[in-house]
Every structure is written in structure tokens, then in C-alpha cells.
Length: 250
View 1: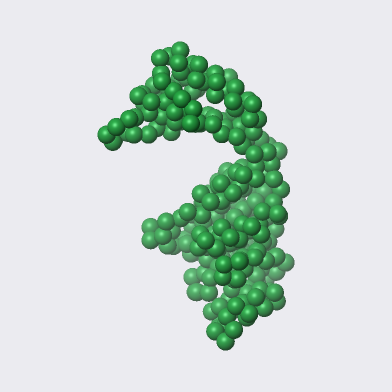
View 2: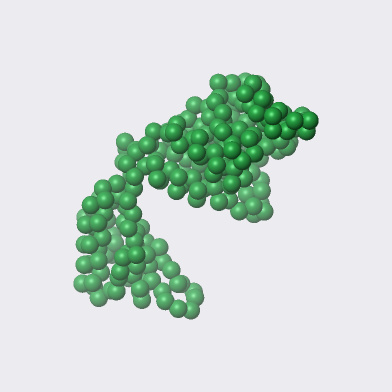
């Protein structure tokens, strides 16, 4: 929203996402998490379990944003290559982390085998991200936070991540529900509102198309100044009423 606000990107890793076998929900969770901290999520990419692709994407994202969050590929199997890719991207070694090794040894005991030991490999200089669900840690290196792909685990890891982030002003959002007309019928009014209030963001999201029942559009006004958002909504409602279009706030 503003140049002074921290920015972030998400890199979702896994062939299972691209194949459609698994539906990603982590992006939505991260978007809400970052929004509550006043951090602007500006970009998201999804890549498969291919090291070169992960490296290229990660380098592009970490050089373009204050923070990058990766999900997936840090388990014990052969296709869990995120740690390897991150180390390559930073040009550093990938040794076993003593604390991670202790955590995993305690967790698995006599079942701590070679595949599980792979999860103790952390890029040199990285700090661990606590995993209160299964103990196997994620890690932070520079401005990159590497987390699990399993949604329950990824969400739990955010508790340890939050204190490490520089926050910004929270974005306020209000929604105007327009009924009985399509998106094209309110486009000019919304464009005029956006030109009048250039520090705010205006979006339109149609509903009901192609189905039986009510049709309409949700008009969303976003900004960091709550009073400015409220004033823009009042003006938008007045403009819609003047045009004979039914609208309410929700």
C-alpha cells in the first residue's frame, strides 16, 4: 500500500500442488497473517520439486521483497529438496544443525533413521523455526523463512515467525454490496472513486453470474487510514444511490 510498508512474497513448493493432487491453503493463511501485521504480500509463485527452479525463484523473490516465505519440501523423503535449494541460492553449506539434531533425536528415539536425519540439515548460519506440532523445525536464513507444507504445521510455525518481522500499518477494508446489476454497470462509478481517492485501493468482485438467484458485485475499499476508507465508502454509496443502484455495506 505504501513504500514504507514491509513487503513479502510466498514461494509454494511441491509437485503435488502443481498436479492438483493437493490443494494449497497456505497462501491464504499467510496472506491473512501478513495483512494483520501490516506487511504487504505482493507476489506468490508455485514451483515443483526441481532444484534449479526453486533456486531461481527464491533469488528473484528475496532480492525483490523484505521477506520471503517458502512452504513445502522440508520433510525426510528424497523429493524434499528445499533446504538444498536454499543453501545453493545463498551459496552456503548445508550442515547438520546441532539443536535440530537434538530435537529430532528426542522426537524419534530409536526410530531416528537416516531419512529423518535429513531434516536436521540447515543452511549455515540459519536459525530454527519452532514446530510445536511434529517438532521437526523450519528455519530462517536472511530474509527467507522456510516452513512446512502441511497446513497445520505451517500455521503453527507462524507463532515463532511473527516476533521476527518488522510490522507496518494495518490495512483497513470495507465492502459495499451492490445487487441487481453486473460489474460493468458500476465500473465507471468505481473508476471515478479511485481517481478521487488515489491513496486507497478499490476492487470489484462479481457474484451470482451463471447461477439462479441474485446477481451483483462486491466493491471493496482498502487503505491504511481508517477514516479515509470510511469517507470513501460514504461517497461511493452516495454515487451509487444517485445512479439508482441499490447498495449496502457488509
